[in-house]
Length: 244
Image (cartoon, rainbow, N blue to C red; front, side, top):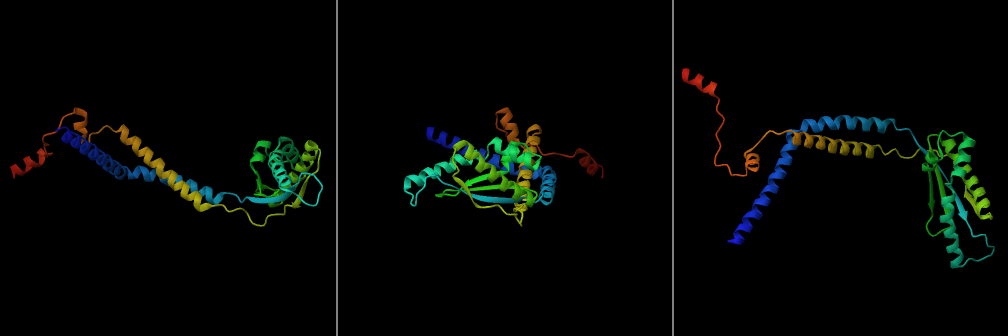
């Protein structure tokens, strides 16, 4: 008897899950206009942003870090020390002092924090090389600022570490092509965001809408099972038919 009760309860729970899924589907069907109306302006804004996004150019330079020890051959400990210096120097390259001097020289309309976000510093794996890159809307300015950052970085290392063990391997040159704008990704993101926003608004409307749509809603409120339903009758139509 207990097993039967458990099975009935389990069936009832699974049936409720199925009903809830069906309710969600019908909610999306009922509120499709709301979802579409929320998606349209979001997609339009995403499209406008994608086509009006300015071109960004990136220039990069390559630096090499050595431990400063003279010698023809390097052992594993020397290479390990140089790689640790690379990590340390990567942090120095974004110091406020360096960024402030570069901003002052080229009269950049940015704060050191904003300029720091436009600079990327990467370590070439298993090497003593540092890749320093800067991106902006002007390719000539990108080249000049990148090379100046490298020069200021080398000076700063000499002041802090008292050694000149950083050298330029490859200077930055003026970039000819801008970075990819990734317009397709922007449009896809706007479609997804618009759909999620529309579904959220539709769900909020459904939550605030207290109209009972089916007998199951009444059963949940009253806690009893409905025995039958009375069909809707149009009395005016019935009276008209009798008079004829």
